[in-house]
Length: 284
Image 1 (cartoon, rainbow, N blue to C red):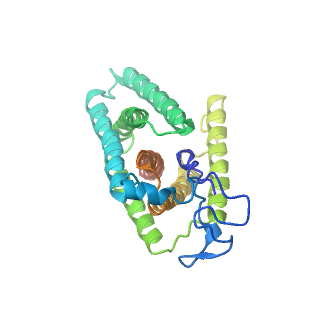
Image 2: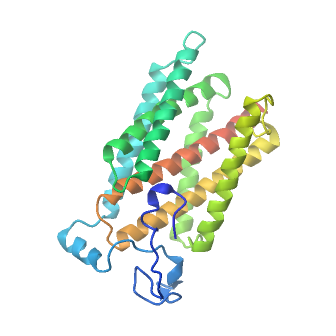
Image 3: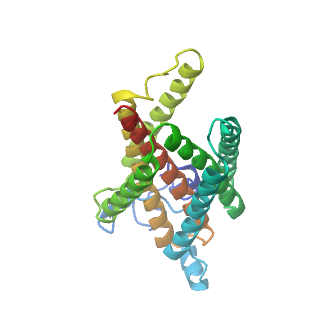
């Protein structure tokens, strides 16, 4: 099962073509921890290699993931705050700040693509992505707070924490099961969502000023809520991939990939929550 998050695709890239599960060497359809074995992603590492890594102390641990994720998210937060303070969005500096923000967004996107297609994680690329993404988020948040809906940024941050905590609780309580069917559904829904975003941008760029209507009103709020739900689904998939990596002894360097994937998802959730709250506040 491949994750729809590209950086985790290596963890779910290879299911044994025969009749056994690549993680457990059990027949497909057997039970693993009370769940069907084929509900789990396949382990791309050689069977038994996890034991050697654990013995050598080189297998990834949950502490590794937490530290790397904290470092990556901390970089996003730090550069976001600095850009908020150092790149004012008043009339005199608006054009320059917007230009820097757009440039930072493009660089962050390119770095994320480069890392996604690399065979091994690069902390420099991941932290570079986080830094440039933070610059974009800082200017965007400052603009929304100053010109659209004061105070909405704090609400969006709290909303992101609330969604993340809710997904974590639901995942740990097994209210959400990340199965192959779940992953396929989320991937299909996300594809449709992104295609609608692209269509909206094209309509906006070529004459229809409001695009498909996703920027205001009830339709905009509904579209944003769908985006938040998709982000929550991605987060559950990220939790599952991290759990599998720790359980089956992935190399320690994979903690950086986990941090990268979690950061991408949390940024998605923040932007969608910000969209919903901005539309709601501007319409009232």
